[in-house]
Image (cartoon, rainbow, N blue to C red; front, side, top):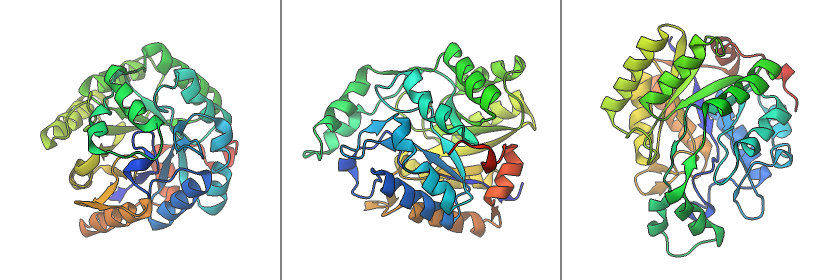
Length: 308
């Protein structure tokens, strides 16, 4: 329990290129930043893809395959492919890269929800790409779909057929009960890796009391059969992930979740955030899990059984 798994979410589908010149967009940029984050101490790399020309989130497996083999060749880090994708991808779109790559891990969102990015539109006057303000504004009328049938499909196609295990992303307390439903049905087996996500407009708020409530609820539902990590959005990232480390949990950082290193100071890379978090974890007298240790902790199939 002294080992802390650092997950680095490298680019995501929430932030747009205008928001930071350091947000990786091209396959080379994503690969470079992912490798550097692993070298800084991230045991898990949580990956999305983007259109290399526009920077728009992309579900295209061919784009993923431009950086996945390179990352695997350069580092032993666990590669976790998102099935959350981004607006306006269908569920079928969102799973294609993971179906193609058969990774050790994939994210799995545990319920449908509102997912509001539109407040960011008012923060910028000039945009690098025409698609950006429309993309953000469209979230005002967007439902992030993750039905029980969708979840069953991913559990079957990725978990049962391909041996992929999951980062269960829980944006609210009800998502924990959804996960318990699948555990009760025998469709999900321990050890579980649960990501508490706090601060998305439409999900549970980024408040320490809410994190404690999520943890108490997970303890009640899953006992000793799970490990947890914390994702705090934006300025809430560092306080909440530090709180997770003090509670015996794991941490997630990266430019998908937060573009800044300090107040008003953009992070120049994902590795900067990993390095900052590693220092905090080690200052708490906990140690960083290596990829091999994380594989053992989470019961993963191993990098030799992926398809890239």
